[in-house]
Length: 195
Image 1 (cartoon, rainbow, N blue to C red):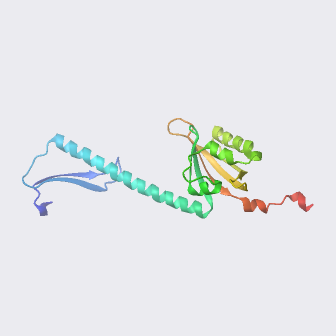
Image 2: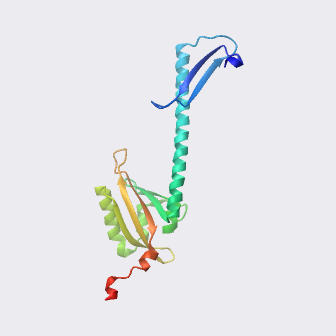
Image 3: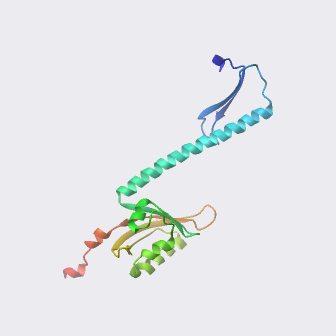
């Protein structure tokens, strides 16, 4: 700032909490020397804190998007769909691959009921009991079941998941993965058939 003829300045380091300093916010008087009042300096500190938090949030959001993209790439490559059900509301978020597996419309708002509707009647009660047990116990779950697609075809799905407690004291979320195991099931031959 001396090179530009600054006569007075306030230099506030940018950091969040006890984290490292990652920048500096500066305020300069160019025309004459100036004594900055305590009130003005406190205002500068508050402004610097707002900037620091916004920059840190932007960096965190970018890291989250990158992590999410890597996760989606990995699950897509593994032909696996992700899902997350809010236990208190029954609303469900799913990855694109999950929508593909279950033939859900891209804009369809999904709920627990959306999944139960496509489960084959022979497996409906067993899957529902498994999910309810996982919600109540917090234990991991895994199950294999059939679904009926809109065209009437039957596909086999393997699902794994676990309940994660909510930060607000609610039951939280049931999160998991689903994959189509129809090909594997087609090659499952009962042992009794060889006798």
